[in-house]
Image (cartoon, rainbow, N blue to C red; front, side, top):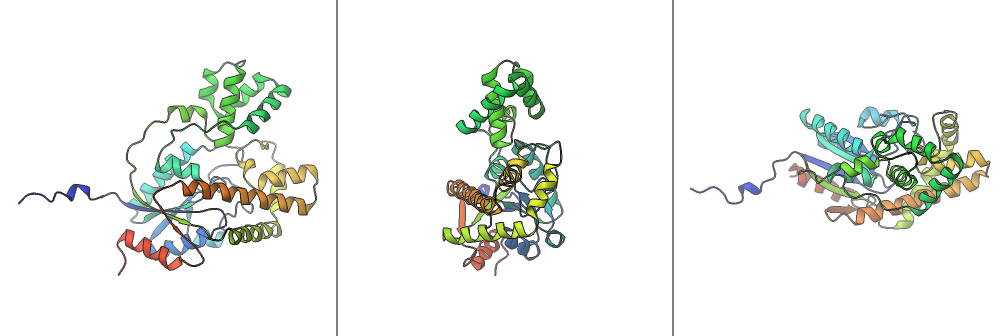
Length: 321
């Protein structure tokens, strides 16, 4: 008897779930439930949660939540230490293999599109030019000089700095622009090639309220809760660290940037609140735009589709009735 002609099409890679969505969409609560329900372990896919001390403003899960559902790749860097998308991809893949080896299912949870892309697809396309960021670098260079900007580049991307002369303003500017916009050194982007097939078969799920105004309400509520929980005190403590400055990726995180400006300029609290909420809405808009461009995702409304999204996971894992 001849072999089954379709046998070679069976995907034998271990399963993993990617739970994606804009900020404040309810991903964490859903993920915590799945940890016990499906035997999963969470890998955080969030560029702010990697930093120690960025707790309130990043909506980092509290101690009780982490006790019930430990998250990998949380609190792995100090705020002054850069952490690139390429580093995340390597760390996350290793975490996924460790979780699988322990007999559990990796659950990727977050909203940082660059991290998801770096992990699942690999880094290939250089970030586009950012005119506003480029002008800011030019203004800094006019004050500090290009050799000083080259010295800054040497701190965040030694490989690029070794190739670029201290007087090569154009290349220094582009290298700093790429790093500041993506958190990934330009040398890493340049070395990235087409990656092999991913080690896991991944079900990509998106949770996002169908009504944009509902998401906006959730964002405003959460921002108010952050302020009440002592967000500004948290930022004051961070600002007291001489190693930190506004151009670091950690300090450019939404909410933190606005808080630093508020503390530096002594603006009214109401103005800070409005600016913080607006910036968070803009972040959510960018996240949704990126997610819509992903063709292999399934979308669910967290308010009405909790049962359906659970069934989708059961079907993927083969655990349904």
